[in-house]
Image (tube, rainbow, N blue to C red):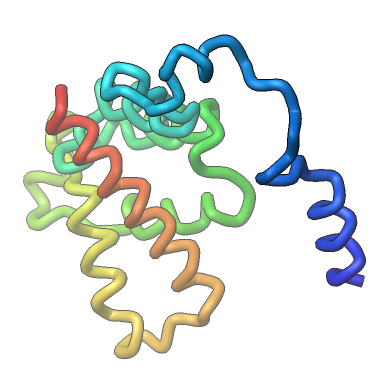
Length: 149
């Protein structure tokens, strides 16, 4: 069944050596991409937008819900992957005084990194590992996007 779908897909793709007419730009030597021609993907733009609003290494505790909502709104985190957010919100503050401080912040990237390091110790199921790894990659991308601001 997959072979049939793949065959159908490949048959509907234009051949690399087709004799299709060339676009006018290709005749003038503009086939090679220039550095200014680079286009960001939609996902990269969404990651950058959230990164401008939230610093993944210092998210205020009272904004964790807004952070999750923004990730959902932009389609960066959805479905069962939302369960991985529990790693961030479930971490306890370092002391009782910090627990009641609304201005204290959470290092989401550090918490997810620590969860990844404890996979074997906690015998984390494979599906949870995948979700945590995806969240880690997203947070790393957000950190990189924020560094470019």
